[in-house]
Picture 1 (cartoon, rainbow, N blue to C red):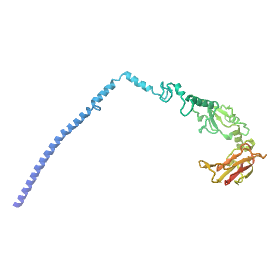
Picture 2 (picture 1 turned 120 degrees about the vertical axis):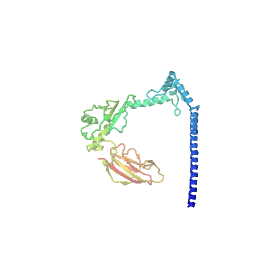
Picture 3 (picture 1 turned 180 degrees about the vertical axis):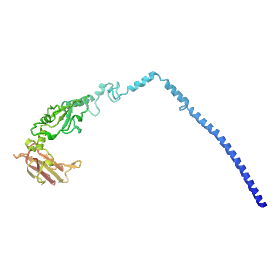
Picture 4 (picture 1 turned 90 degrees about the horizontal axis):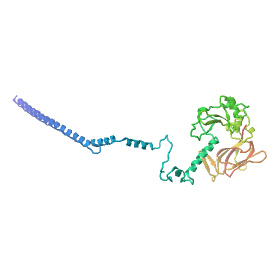
Length: 356
């Protein structure tokens, strides 16, 4: 029993010593923490003082700059606005400087326009004049403007060289009903004035009808001059293109009658009557070169064709070149036959065709 009491006494003594040691350590920790707070405050104050006292970014420098701004006078403001106004503005016409930049040949506008262009042998003003003359000539001839937004067969002409001319307005024209053409309509003007009576139609120098825009300096022309008008009527009313007494134009594969294909050979006579031929070249000898047109080939010196009339006389010969091409007579309505010339080694076919 005495041994147990002795052991307990030793344990209590050890615990007492540990408690005293922990209390001592806690006191030291609290003291260190209290000492660190003033040190941190001192560091922060030093940093703030360094920043506010900086010669460039410090408080004094900011105050000096503000004082400079506050001291700006009305004269300074006027000078700033004047400098802004001197810059070329989009809404104002261009004014050449009194002193031209280096390389312009002089100090006045006249010197600039009289300067010979580096890549040409004439002064600049001559090319400007030529450009203006070209615009005036196109305008006076009422040169049409191509526009994909205008339905066939409308074209646009007018004073497109004038500063006050606005853009042509596609909504001012309308689709024309080709089905309303009558066989008795002698001209396109007869047709549109009969069908579209709400419009005020005028007649152009080339015999085509047109209307004048009420909003801009343009006129909208129904481009069906005599040749195109007669061809259109022939197609609409089952007439013969040959009745127009005009050289044939390829009207599309659905509008022709194909003959029998013949193998190409030098001196071949293609029997007729015919309005043209389709030629297909499948191979050529090695010395013959070609020009590429996308996926098409146009062979050089691959042969020629002459269309001959019913009097045994031929028109000007035409070259054969495209691997797949269409050839029409140039000066005769129908050909009695055609004659082929080929260099050795060219292989392919020729197919005659006729129009109704």
